[in-house]
Length: 112
Length: 117
Image (cartoon, rainbow over the protein chains, first blue to last red):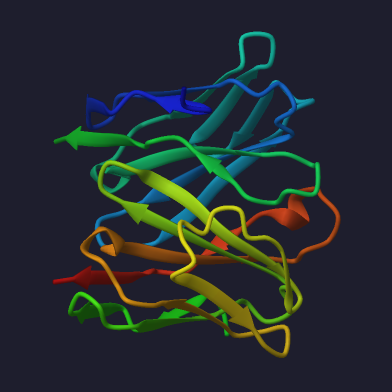
């Protein structure tokens, strides 16, 4: 099965909060990331969280980590049309293997 | 440069031809990564460089794929005898390459979109 799973699509209205969820299977995951990909563009790092943290807030973004359930979420407050993009969660391990394992991405559509 | 750059941005080739994709990492980043993003496969890791050596090549899908890095900077991904299933966006990323922590955060380039006809 997939190491990292995300729902494929989320639609919200402008001004509402968006919550994008991610689950992972490997308990040795050390760092967890959220990346944003706009159409035709590369991956933009939004934020990251260490596995020994349970929450991180950065302006409109809040990351919650439930290590017991291996569940990660990204909350975007006051969602704007410019937030429409694909959001990827990714994990890495501090084991010498530096590759990121990505989820399939969640397409966020913000309706005006 | 200010960010990771890749060239060309788009490449169309015929089946059976060889292609070379180039990546210029962020200045000072010793670690460099190649990923592939294709429909139905998501984002797949291909290869990781630390300096000029590649300690992890586990993601290369076949021996038609190879990569090198010279001078601890620019990297080239080469695909020989391209096949239609090689069509994808090839993404390069770089990081500081120190041992763990946020210094390992990977920054991505805009990608090269490869289409094999």
